[in-house]
Length: 505
Image 1 (cartoon, one colour):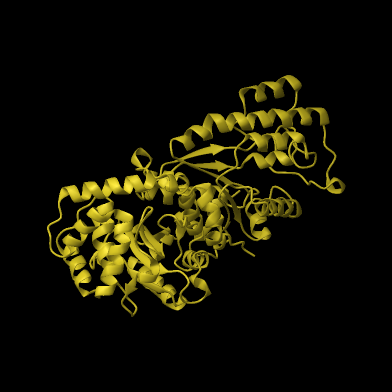
Image 2 (cartoon, rainbow, N blue to C red):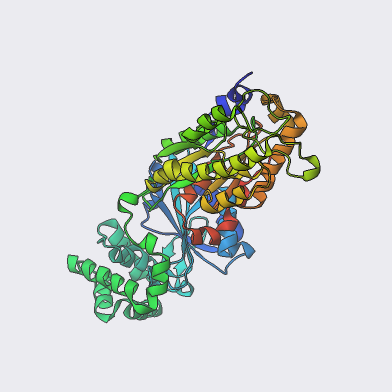
């Protein structure tokens, strides 16, 4: 029998990373999408920030501001982010839409130089809960490479880094002063009023003096940081601060390779034999480890990795298997594949009492396996790739047993559920041990499982037919997104990930 990798030459011999876009190509796609949507938008940061992002190979941000409510219907934050995720492609790694704080979405993209981040600010220019300039006062140049102008540019180039604890100098400070000098008297007056309200009159006057030529001091930065902290913990900001507590506090030892706060992820791969689980897991592990993410593996099938007592129990009872009659014969391990659920198609099962007991035994074993192998790795921040999952217990060894419901209640849901998929005939050609009809029925039930949306973050189908140039790309982005997003953020950005599921037909 040929190994799975030998019948998936497109997955095995083609390096999809050779076809990845450059950062310049990703920037051009981003500009095209924003211009096509007709929104008001502009690059943020100093004039050389975009050039540095294009030449780097690290995950530094490319900062973009845009005004919701302008342009076409795609100007809705959710719709525009969904389109960017689909067409770049990209995935959200942060999504903050609390109107009391800075609203922004950070997207991770895969370029030929590695992972990169695009950060989109929606509407008001803010730092945390402090407003630098409301969206209706933000001005920018026209064209395909617009930049913030006037008071908006001054706030972005000077006040934003000062509140974040950095004192701009050199070219960035000169750009801020030039932008402030180019603003009209009315525009400067409106900005000063906003700064007085958010920063306090003394600090606002000091920052305006810097914009007009005074030398910034270390005490300016210290006072600005204290002002930001006070605004963050003020009673009126408690609710929004608590919601975003994981992104406000420094990442420290929890920092991911993107420099953001990350956490462990459980990725469960399901599917019938021959669907391509091992190949997809190997490719995903390679991509993640190349990007700097730690990975580990676990097995949740019933054929091996059992509790020590299973082998002893089989010898004492004189049985080699509790597999469904007609599915396996001889002293083979327990079948890992579900049997037909419908009573009219269910085969006669031998040793019914033993099967019922085995279902409960396996339910306990699943809980034990998760706590012993999966949970510790997830706590260490690893991406845990799990071959099969607790859902197999729904149909084997005793279909419909209450043990499966108990096990699913006690074993946490996977963060990402993955179904490698291909046409049924191709799957059967890879692993013809079962009949084509039975194998197709098993895979169909796994497809139905994904429709239940049992994962905490995302359900992903991966095309293993060989017809997709980079079948693991969407899965990689989904896992990286799950490693950074909270459950609340994931639900708010759920529409942005719909394109990751691509069932081959």
